[in-house]
Image (cartoon, rainbow, N blue to C red; front, side):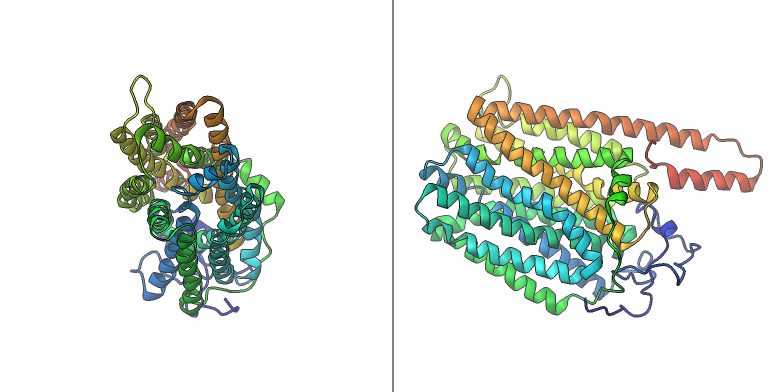
Length: 486
């Protein structure tokens, strides 16, 4: 945080040992030469083979708590804000724009956060991001005092922008910490972090709806905003020093090299699609559930809580499974196909909508969209190294920023397109379009799985004349079975 080293073992292991989060440590891999640039986040030696220390637990607790809080803040307005806007005769398209303002800001500022992390220090960026999110949330609670429709929408949008600016900083820094400090547990810890995001996305509407019913519009914002500010202060006091020498941030050339990699492009597209599947139906869901099914804001909050609970139970397990799989793409293809089924159950073709179908659809969607999302971060890290990028915190921050920006693209397009489709053709049309989109995304994931399977078989069947050559072939197969197709 203040340029302090973490002491013994602070030299990061080499890229060869960290090239694929699936594999255990390579004890024969050399450490970085003293002449090579050191990472901004230092990694204690032996991290992959030892149990988590108290230091590790504190670092992980800070990251997952941040994920829980900023996702709760972002999602808590779902049950009541559309209703408040409707009382002021605000069109659904403008409501969707307020929801999308958060994602638009994330899209613009996540790359900036990715550049700030190696230059300013990952802990400092994380803590300042949390603090800004909390202060902006408290400010959001004041907009109900504005009587005019235009002023209400403008102030709401400004508050969402400030929230998203803090969230982009905290989230990008948190992902960088996971990638650098825990290279052999990337999928599991990213899955744990995304599970906490899922908990926040489910608990946020539940808490928001209940606090709104108890204390009115401002109460949810004051409560969750205050807790987030307090968490930033606690993080400042508890998070261990993580900073080493500042690094030059990754630039446009590194970004282009990453995005030109087919594996990276596939995972970016998957993140965008999953994000759109999560967010597209939010603007119209509360009015639809109230008008067609008689579901109140409080009941809808409980539906979100139930759906998020299933994802909470399975997210870390999916992450641990991904750390052990040779290829995560078969899992991604199956998860995307089942998520499309869950979306379709919101308004199933040929069947009247009902509360049981809505709850089932929300649960299936949450469960399997998460199963498709969790592998993408580790896949992007692998693709970055396969594309020739250096194994440094600058690259890890770049990957974290690309992932966050990709999710934001879907969060921007999803609510806007969902709101437009709902206004033009009804909520059921929006459901049909986005369930079909998620189903189509399963096809390239399945194609990548088949291509990697053929490559693995080809490498295993490569003839070797000596035992040494056979060993070299086996090592090549282990390290390249997920290498992107170029």
